[in-house]
Image 1 (cartoon, helix red, strand yellow):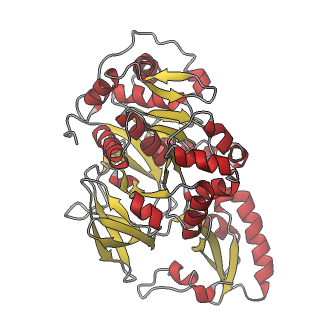
Image 2: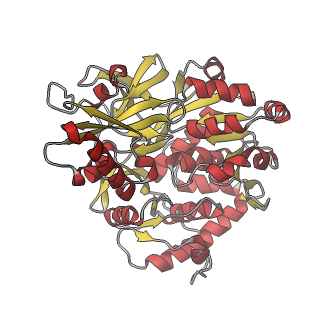
Image 3: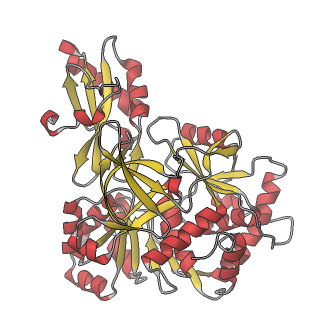
Length: 481
């Protein structure tokens, strides 16, 4: 792997220059863009960014854009200028977007159609930062309802993309069919920058949803991709829609490689996907605080379905028992975050004296092989979407009568990975009325992904010896309805 200095923006753009005529992006209508187009477009709109920012001191730009070529252009324009990016989910409520923008001190970019209609007032820029600077601010709240802005440096981000590309076997022949949100870390790092690091091409598919799922197999076949990046929920849906034996034979013939990220793969999803498509799901485990992807599953493990994946080069892992005496995974990354963004700069946090980060995941470790067996953090992964119990509890507690307590917990689900349970203590004879009250409040205040699926009435909320809420006990099989 390249050295830290060689893996910065200067080296990155130098590599792009060597493949100017190579295709790097294919739009849904078949229109193609080359690496030369990426170089020219990013230089042109770097000038527009300078015009928009003026003397703005923070040098952070935020955007909430749907998937498209504009993501490649804006990220590389920012990389040229040494700007930090705050990608926002397009379906995030406006109030939440505004909160993140305010905390980052960012300037919000207009919609792509407006932004790319602007004409720069200067010549295309050909200046690249040689010093390392913050590049991506990824919003994540861990176990609290207050978002944390995880700050990744330009050098670390690019080196991580190169590391993942090499471990995944990406090359100039790689053609990734991209349906993940490009504002997510997996969509930005795993399926975009890692592809560019190898000189491959991104095939822009529609962002995965109920409507696009129906035409997924037909649409992807137009471009003959050889790599997919999905989540377990997407994989489950695709498997159920894969009923054409001829398509199965074509996928196997093209040796399509499928990576699954964001959550562990349920065994039933692995089996169904392999049966319907003839392909194996390769698990990718990553932590944004550690620079993104940290493991990738080998073909042998993917075929056996044993869930063991290999640590990427440069990563180290150890297991430490948490307060409930469960095996928590700690990772040491060669591309660690700069810290959590606050008051206009990143503040180092979350690592021990040896540089290891507590991931909040429960795991087994065998040499450099790793298997995730659960989560110790309170963050719930529902279909690959992070849901935060503290936020749900805060919104629902606004309508609780005195003496009634609630707690949100995760329940294993065969397709979603986890679903949301709500425990209610102290309701007594008013239990049904309180359930209706909480349901109405949830519909009014929470997103669809945050809606509790199971309500459970208990005498009291279980707690650990130190007084902390024991959410894991609420999900114990003996308590399931």
